[in-house]
Length: 274
Image 1 (cartoon, rainbow, N blue to C red):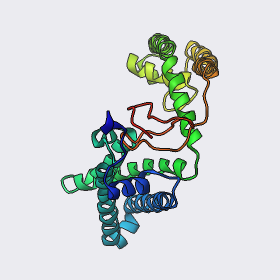
Image 2 (image 1 turned 30 degrees about the vertical axis):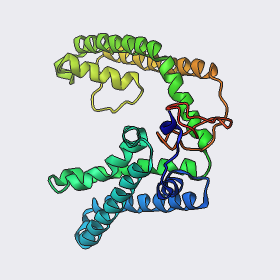
Image 3 (image 1 turned 180 degrees about the vertical axis):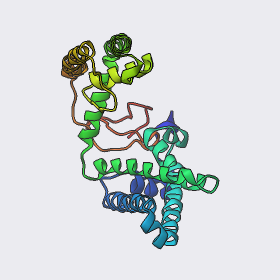
């Protein structure tokens, strides 16, 4: 238990932890700001590399920039694992997975070039700006939304099952009413049309041309407006039941979890002393 409650024992690990994970200190804030700038520059380089005219002219420079940022993020990821008390737990956390996915595409591009554009996933790391700007309560609000969605999961599953059944029936009806000569070549094609129409997207790539088919389409359009409001109402009810206090931006030195209460002395996720 003593080991769990201790912060990184070695001074250099403790200093590194405060710089990398703590946004309340000047050094930690500047570290996050520089990191976010590097992330944005890296994503910009990946996006520009996909433009044919720019790639032709500045391919070497963009490739060098990509590898520079990848090596930089790799070193940073290693430092994060070294200074945290529970590296495996951090590696399995949301930001730990994002940090790993941010560097993998470039290394995989050595074997398959198609994987290199996936490096834009590192833009997710910009979410750390919530800690820099002390918007930790927004992270808490996101957790509330997640909890509300989880609490309403059964109702949403029932709703989606009903919608799925409905679109299969509508797709079958439009297939019978319109037929192959009007573009509805199969029931799955009719189901696709039903989903597009019910969600009020309306691509227009396929549409009914007969009177009965157009009447069915009108009913589906009207039905679509009423169906859209159902999941919104379900989640809203669950959100109204949630009560919370604004958390601090303090990071657990063992599992790197955030969102602790202001008066918390121990991490509510792993039990380590804060």
